[in-house]
Image 1: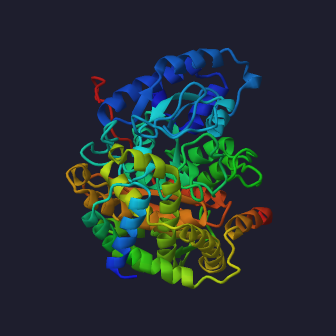
Image 2 (image 1 turned 90 degrees about the horizontal axis):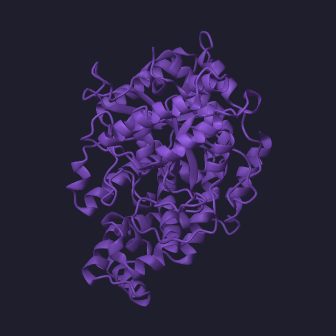
Length: 481
Length: 67
């Protein structure tokens, strides 16, 4: 019989909702697993076992008819979200940004649906890098091989979900911070449309691109979480009043659909940047995934996506300008409190003028229009790499110069930031393992608000493959990891 | 703008804002950032006067209304 922590979010929620599984039992199982996993990969900044068990016992007393869709489901969030009695760390020991909010909307929505927070997850300092390295809290490591990076900045979230310490986690994505660690750790990482999930009560990095995202083992699980976390929040300046999606049933039915469920879906692909940017093994795995998708009925449309290169440049300036607004004063007062790679980016950001910021915002609207009128007319879903290769070794960052560490981040950002800039939904999908046993992912993107299309495509793929069912850090017969 | 002038500008901005930035660091940052800024200036030059900074949000709203 499967351990409770081995169950998918969908199966766990069904059992908890029906009363077949007790909340305290489920949370206890995940807490034990999370503690073991955390010792190996340092995914938690704080594991709050006592608080989670207290809430679990309360939920066990809730009548079945009053249970929410995520009743008793354990989760955790990247440590950028405000809680009533606790300011987030943002991955640094002295988080000195003041926030007005007294609670994070997305945590309130999760808990309102019945989910139980197990604690706060590790991240890159300030969420301003993509490796998971963190000198203050220690790096979050890759559960498939702890000598490798988890990726970031939602590093702990991806590592914890991959290692079955959590059935889902909440992250934040400004330029790839959900999708990159998802690819490195072999889980689904969804960056919804800009404004889809409320950011109220989160530590910002770039107001014009920050998006709350979801990490889960499968597309079906991600859909279940998105349905509960999304929704218009009039107190979030980024929120756009679009009805909350109701995707769980639709996506689950796609996973169970018969032959050729993707019939008629047009998948757009530019092979040139994929082959230029990626290692051969990653390209081969991406091609194999495309073959599966075509066998499921999708058609391939060859695209020229060179316009994305310009979007990356403009996104970089936009992030610089807005991060300088956020961190400029603190950086000026105490530059040594910033990690070298962040300090380097903030130093460069000081050269941004107000007119550069406005130009970047003007380019943002035009970029979205160009994407919608070009590639996303020719194709329903765009597919590209989620990383140049599998997760690099930890020492490729810890032993690197700030310039080398920055260059690694930039190579990853180039693949993700253009889509963040346009605000479209994007999803990192695990498509296999390289010869070293490390996960490889591809990235899917679609028109704004078309998360359902991405999740359906991913669910169909996962119905035909089993990469998402494989788990790292398996226990031995003696119970050790 | 030449690399040399970009370094001077960065130094001047840093000095005006009280940020310690050594001359060598300013030059290095400016040299490294020069290709990015060249490309950004090229993109910005392609903007029309009515490419409005609020258009991004409007397009997202329109797409949401279409469903």
